[in-house]
Length: 84
Image (tube, rainbow, N blue to C red; front, side, top):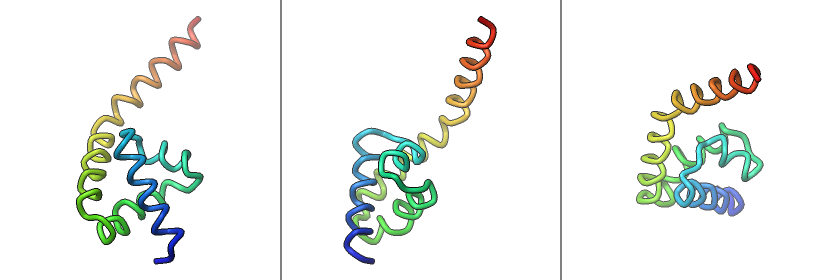
């Protein structure tokens, strides 16, 4: 793994850990794809820092469990503004 990838993996992971960001938010923040963020935190990070990987995994699992709520809220807001 080259140094730029190593650095990005750590930066993305620390960002998710500090902010509780979703994969989509992290991808947007760092200018990479969601697939890249997934690969970074699920495959590369455990080889670099297992403890941080565990913490990030918990945050991503929480975000995944909450996504149906966020989606429902977005739909509700969409139709509320359309009705006005």
